[in-house]
Length: 89
Image 1 (cartoon, rainbow, N blue to C red):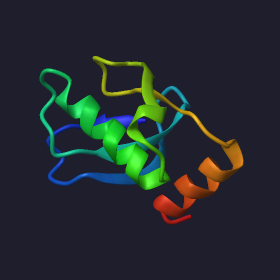
Image 2: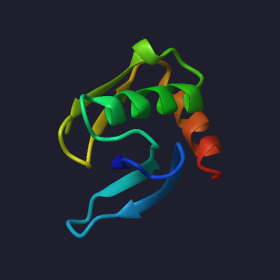
Image 3: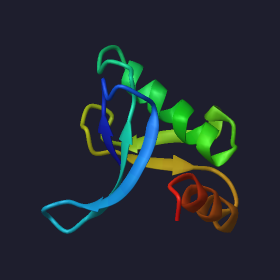
């Protein structure tokens, strides 16, 4: 995921390709990137969008970077359908 803190609203965006060829889901949150606030907002937003508890969502890479790897515990097929629905695909 590619996180934009202070993005004006909390929203899952679109899938984009970075210059190195990696595909990322863009995410905007209103929270500031201080004291982990933007990361917490990301976890809550992803949990809400996928219909899972926030405790099942964790940032596994990139805690201090805009590009993050997020892990969500649950049934992969169900989560895939949920995320596609959340981003309008």
